[in-house]
Image 1 (cartoon, rainbow, N blue to C red):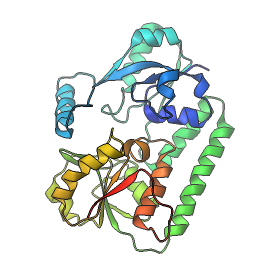
Image 2: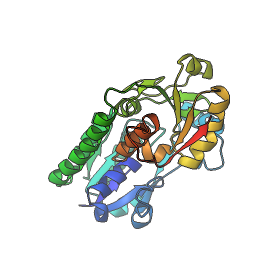
Image 3: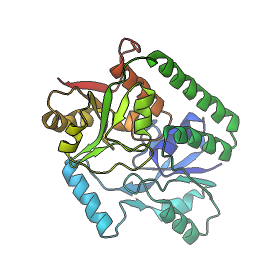
Length: 294
């Protein structure tokens, strides 16, 4: 099977299922595993935000959306040459990846008969279900079941470890200018890690808010996990959170690696957050997180 993945989390799922050698096309953001972007053709490009501040990124995104412009570019000629059997896409967030209708239009234009699987998880349970769906569509349902069972077993170990302990109020900041509280599956992750999520909308899109509103939530812990950033970028953005919410413990989190991409590594994120919230119960030192203040 010739597989094209148009979102990073799907690329991770394909490799987790042992199908990396069947992956022929990816996006410029598909960097996990690191070999993904070099072993497959890059068929989607996008806005270069490497030199922009968070506020500039937000303004650029809002400007393009208001003008009806796409944030991502599908290289149709590259897609034509790949002749895929299966295309993995999404409609969850047009800021995070190419929307599915653009993919369907391109395939129709090419006369392609490729199967299209749209992955739109909204909760942590949905994320696990997408792994099952990819496994079934690619003929490795048994392997997918083993992967999902393993991830559920890890979540159960965390649940048992934190059971009966006080649950700190946890605010996850997904963006800092303007501030966004994380939604979708992120509140589920906090709950699974033994915290009480505040400021997010479980199963729903994250929306902009204000620092005053965030302070009124009286969080015990703030996790800064910006979309599109690793640990160093999160730590840099966390400075704005420290200034806006003084006196509250603030941790920077590798957003792309642990929180915002709906793939298998979200369970790594639950384990890391549990170690931050309950170090006595989950003693393993959390990786890809860093305490910023106080």
